[in-house]
Amino acid sequence: MIKSLKVLQHPLSDSLNQLALLESERDSSQSSFKSKLEEFGLFPLKTSAMEIFQINMGKMCNQACRHCHVDAGPDRKEIMSRQTMQLCLKVLKNTEDIRTVDLTGGAPELNPDFRWFVEEIKKLGKHIIVRCNLTIILANKRFNDLPDFFKLHHVEVVSSLPGFTQDRTDRQRGDGVFEDSVKALQMLNSVGYGQEGSGLVLNLVYNPAGAFLPPSQMALEKEYKMELSSRYSIVFNQLFTITNMPISRYLDYLLTSGNYERYMDKLILAFNPETVNNLMCRNTLSVGWDGYLYDCDFNQMLDLKVSSAKSQHLSEFDADVLNERKIVIKQHCYGCTAGSGSSCGGSLTDQV
Amino acid sequence: MDNHYYNAKDLSKFGNIAEYQKELADKFFSYYGEVFKDSHLTAKEKSLIALAVAHAVQCPYCIDAYSSDAFEKGYSEAQMMEAVHVASAIKGGAVLVHGVQMMNKVKEIGM
Image 1 (cartoon, each protein chain N blue to C red):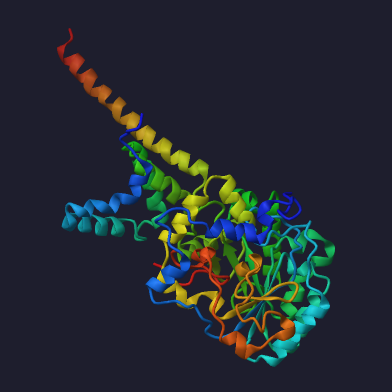
Image 2: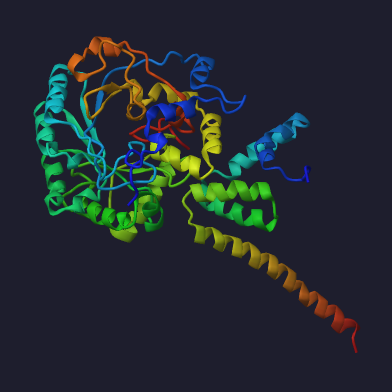
């Protein structure tokens, strides 16, 4: 299993080095994301409504994927404390507009307070999404009952599966991941997830295993459904296609494989102004494992805190101030506006 | 050698052919776009056909474009190579089947 950039003391483990690279002028044809938004009258980018609270419960993960923008892995020890979770619960209780809580990581289930946190959030009547990497369900006996736990709390499960074949999945996520993912999906199906009429939602995420953009979400979903059903009798609700962001380990992959320039050009060339209104940073607030606030998970990994100086941490949360904030943008934002657009909920525009 | 006939960067300038004849270029690109849409064949299937044809016509721009496109649409390396073999078999077959014409001629003039 690969080691995290942090443990390797790799220069890219420092977000400042990543930003310096992303912001450096590569050639005269490159336009900044800011100037691109200005060109279409879309600057400054502001929030629409705070509807989703995306909480990173820690960087610890049982997997170490080659594209991971979190630089997560078994060698990362940063996880959210119960004290910080209590701050989250306080904010959620006082902010009715936030209807959905999206739990991510790392593998959020590895946090020892994960189940307690889910139960407490549920008491507040919020819809919960868990970004489950699937293999965690089989990683240890104590996680085998996760499908039942998710069912009990009516959690929406969103899981990565970058291909319906072993080759593509294992290349990106590590040896044996596909086989375990199939088993985990079958376990989720067996308690009702993805089954018609069950009300238990199981969505899958595709992201490219290489230096390219995702294909049409609609066409790929159709293919996934057909292939997973015929090969493994697996059913699911929706497929979300997500573009890989030039951040952290994926940025390292782009550089070492000689694809960085071409990939950035591709993202910039594919800028689609129609995606901007639906960008997830407009209705989501991202919370770090240590309680700091960001416009999105990607800004979090680049340590770009929200612009509202008076409300950058859960302990000083002020919904009014945050709702008026300008979203912090840099060159990596081209990743969310390329082609059909990209978000944690998949593409942002209707596709042919 | 500084000069060469093919430059990978020229692929992104394909649209520039409209500078000299816009009407025909517009018609071509509109037709091209329609051809590759999902219809009785999926866009994915068409991509693999295009990859095979690109090899048959030995167009380096098309090979670059459809190697990327077919891989991005989910074909494996083995599937893509099999498509190239299909192109090769047809090209090879096209040469060999003319052997019959050669035989016909030889039989016509030979004693």
